[in-house]
Length: 321
Length: 276
Image (cartoon, rainbow over the protein chains, first blue to last red):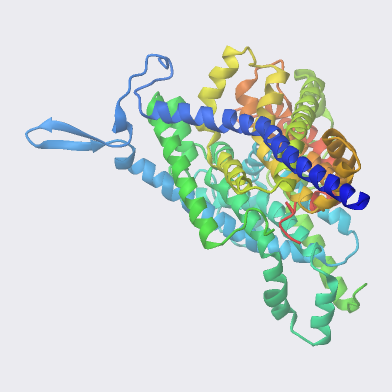
């Protein structure tokens, strides 16, 4: 009798506890949700609103609602003559969209491949591994404005060490103005971004590699399976979840790339991305509303790309519980 | 469980690893070397690698022209402050997501991800106006707040993935034994999650240390951290490479040292728990 009483008491205590946990969980989430609403929600709503007005930087409060005119507007010249205006009819905007998507695809592709190679090498045992790992990690850990400046100077056509090096090896026959010339600006930006971000990818993949139990490799080795095959059949599927999360965080950064391009190749239409386009309109061209509309559209474009990617790659955000 | 690797292959891996390490590290090495050159030698053609007159002139010049220690102090306060404040908000939130299962967890994660879809330039003006109205421009406190807001999603995300690995039964058992919720989180959960919390702390200190967009746009002289200090050395004429290199070296030195000591924790910390 006494035993069942205790059991009932324990059960009711457990259910009380459960109710309390659910209650507290909301209280605990509240500060974060408030902060998220504050940082992501309010400024975003404000920017979306500005995108529907004719606001300019010095007259923010006296902005008037003009509907979708920043996005698309038919300006009638009379006599059936007219022209489309607005973002959706702006070739510069579409060039920026193209540049951004091109940059993101190429950089994330190479960063993933190089990151995997570097991670595999760093995962092996060799002398001075800690030292080399720290050296590889560092490019990611220094501010972009520093690395962009460093590279701008290394790529300088007159005193840059890169031209000097390539001339000596014979890859090029005359110095190249890497960051200034229209043909090479995008290549320059990609080189620096891949240099800077490969370590980050390598680190994420390395962490994934370290979670794989060694005995899987032992078994594959005893069975005499070719190492390349082991990589594609065993290693890759096992690090895929880590890779998928790494790629999405990386891609979101690549799609919003701004400071690298702003410092390395300013005013170059070949490397102008959506963020740079928005910044120019917001602050330099005195078209604040137009820039706000561009920011809104940028958010939408990235959102759509992310959702499509999550669906295609079947990324499980919760990590498959 | 040491694998037996043939000696020749071991050498090959060692050489490949060091070559990759050198290649990746070279631009930084070049910057450090240049910081010890005179301005004339920095732009000499062909560039000299090691055989130049080593000098500390650039460092002296940089030190006399700006107050390195003030910016250093600002960087330390801002990066540590924002990370600690972030942890205080994030630990309870991550506890909720990991131990009180609900359908909303996925929505919260997606919402956090969506904050990374917004271009900072797009929301600069709304945030700037808010800061002006609250008198937070060019204040360390203001920067701590804004960097906390920006890094909070990644802090919560990382903690959530660590907490998920901890069996919830242990926490519930502590509660059944009479521990309060406060005790459960502070005395049971936190000690168990120390490695994860340490990695999160480290990663976010580095992220905050390097943040340049908000720190440049929301500060003037008083609260400016090291990123602003470097930016002040990048003149458009660009003929001050030795000084720029010296300033850069001074700005990244703390990160070089921190990265060197914490490389192991970082590798562990960056999994985001996405692998099991």
